[in-house]
Image 1 (tube, helix red, strand yellow):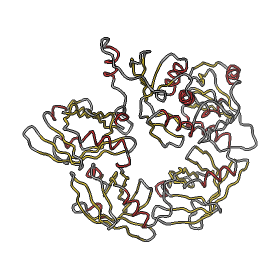
Image 2 (cartoon, helix red, strand yellow; image 1 turned 30 degrees about the vertical axis):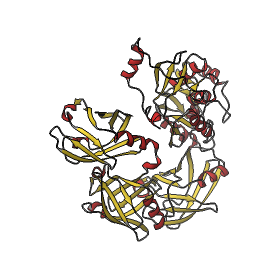
Image 3 (cartoon, helix red, strand yellow; image 1 turned 90 degrees about the vertical axis):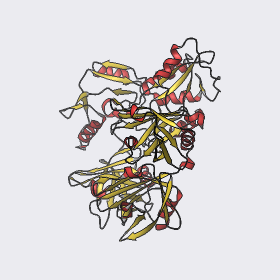
Image 4 (tube, helix red, strand yellow; image 1 turned 180 degrees about the vertical axis):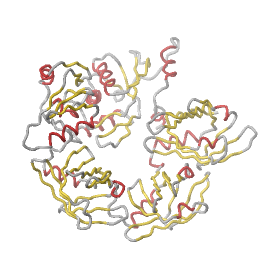
Length: 582
């Protein structure tokens, strides 16, 4: 595991300079094994190459070809109306105009010149319609097999170690996108380079879920298993509203569906119906679970007409959902329903959500692992920072313990029932916000959402014993003392505020800070996984370390160095904290 985590992130730019600029010093490594090296003829090279091919199916409604993609923005004319298409979201405008009338021809005229992108990522300027037809005439037809793999993608950046013929590392190549991967693998396929992929890496499925991969064999298996796991949607329609009845029925029944957006009669009711969960049964029965715990039973049926696939929902006591909806668009893991007059539902597939909640099931979930307070908003104030690094542990005898500064504070908890829903109350000294009667509005194995009037709490499951990465991080952190090597807040270097302080991460979750005068400060820490690996640290108002109270993203960790970043809402880096072993 340690050798895997050591490549958690890319080598820094400066480390790369050391490899390439020190002529007298060459880093020796052993020759990669057959299962590690990428070769011109290997199956993994071919699978990765197919994943990197440009997929042009998303804009087939414009160019009628999956082997090309039109570079945006462009101008098109549909039914006499000129439209500037500057994003993929605009494709639905064309689809809506095509669907406006059932008895006319769906024709689109492109205003030339345009630039198209080929499957090999090459860009070509096209001056007229005939030139475009010449390019795409060799493409496969609608929904025919093609070489590209569309159901899984790499999460970039990734990196490759490149070796010379003596198997000495001569470079580390950073790959930022499919285009760069495509051309790098072409060099591998042409036997121009010897390279191995640096693990771990993350891949993303078509439904937005991710998987971490730690070696070549696992990567090859993951790509092969995902190759046919989704509908590649290579037809010349926008989205995927060309389902057969049988296919749509099976898709609806495969898992529960959760409402994310809802509009009825031009009135946005998302806040009222968000996270309502629907379970489509075999016998035409649909069970809906409301956020307050109500279980509503209705009926559902589908049919396919000239307007496309239709889904009819009927509930005696829920008129807003009762309608025959057009299945307007289907993406992997998502369904969009529509009807004229300002009616729309967006649902996402969720195989983990629990429809039939019982007290026993809630208690089993709570007692299985630790739980982090990921969000706690009471009376408009966010209180979750008070729980950074302080997980909860629920026991069978209604005992709950909160780990604070490495010590366990004991209290009680109770799963109850109010009206039609289950509630959770946690009683801990000095923690009055947890004692509110929290209504459980959403339940998954790894996530519990709770509400109390306008107050909100989210608990996220934390099972470190089941995660090798977290075990490695803990082993590194508790092995010796640390110091702040660098702390950059925006454009300001604040490292000197932490000069001569010693940081000791204890196995109990306690952080011990020794200041230059041998004074002691206590805090809490917790390494956990949530959209990557994170390190939560909390020191209360004890300065200067109170400024470091945060759930930090782990950018890099080695036995002697930990680099942490604080990311903004748009993914930009706001702060960088580097800890080094003393």
